[in-house]
Amino acid sequence: MNRVTEFLKRSRLALVAGLLLTGNPAEAQDAVAGKKIFEGNCAACHSLDADVIGPALKDVHKRRGDDWLVKFISNSQELVKAGDADAVAVYEKFNKVPMPAFSGSLSEEDITNVIAYIKEASEAPAAVVAEAPAAPVAPGAQPTASKTEVAFMDLPPLVFFIIGITGFVLFLIVALIYMLARLLVPMMGDALYDEDFRESWAGRLIFLFRGDLALMTGKAKDIIHSNHDFDGIQEYDNDLPPWWKTMFYVTIVFAVGYMLHFHVFKTGALQAQEYDMEMEQAALFASLNVDDPNAVTDYMVLTDQVALEAGKTIYSQNCAACHGPEGQGTVGPNLTDEYWLHGGDVNDIFKTVKYGVPSKGMVPWQGKLTKDQILEVSSYILSLQGSNPSNPIEPQGEKM
Image (tube, rainbow, N blue to C red):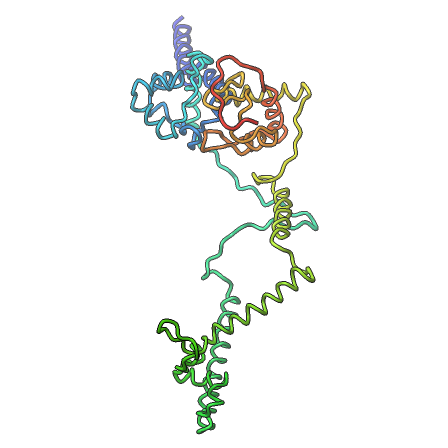
């Protein structure tokens, strides 16, 4: 009998210990439910580890407390208007973008479950991200060049060698000209000062080395023009600076060559033609880069019921929190009127959904939604036009 009693005591102790070690199963279930609610309502604006539209939520329960979080999630603007310091600080830090009030769409139990999920996710160890191996290049395909900036001192030695050789050759040319001048000038004797030679280009160059700037400035003749006396103002017949005359002659030659090249033989492209060619090249480049926000797209609106139902599901899970379940607008603009901030064509809406407008609180959905899903939700948004939902907010943007 004593053995039976002792066995029952040990069994009870083991059961209690097992319950303590396994924890509260209801709490774990709350975190699972909270994860689903978080992904459907909060993931668009919040991340655990980084600020997005709203703050990072890791360990937020330790900084604020559960009661404060329940009040803030239920209606953040009530706390802001009441002057709560923490709520006002968050509102000011994130560009005064108001967080949607979830008191009408989520119960207090749902909000508690979300907090339970945040607690569990905050305690989870950080996932190790393995570096993805480089994708193999298909035979005959051109590898994509990465845009990298190289500092001057990091250039290959061959580049420095070429620069050095070029500088050395230029130095030799200048030194050779100087030595020839020093050798030839004494050999010329008095002929150096002959007026005809001194007026020549070679003579002016030689005297330029000797400090005479006539080659650059021209010669002051100090001869007054006849009949050029106006109110006591007289004009001297001095040379124009040779450099000025040389540039004038060069412009004449350039103008003739320009006219022949562009307007007579038409062997060159004018500015309008160059612009058109560059735009064509940019369009080709954009079409090869799927992540280029300037890439031209020509999607057509989806009208079949299956695609619109899929778009409605995506909208309810990801967009309704900021734009309202009927598209009437809350934090985000009204999607049922004729006014648009970033264009009302399906391609404009596609780009807005894909790349977002972070400065306005619109998160980018590329990487979270596929191209087909973005097109489905964009088509569904267009189907809301003229639906006249209850309590729509004021129009924003331009009428399309």
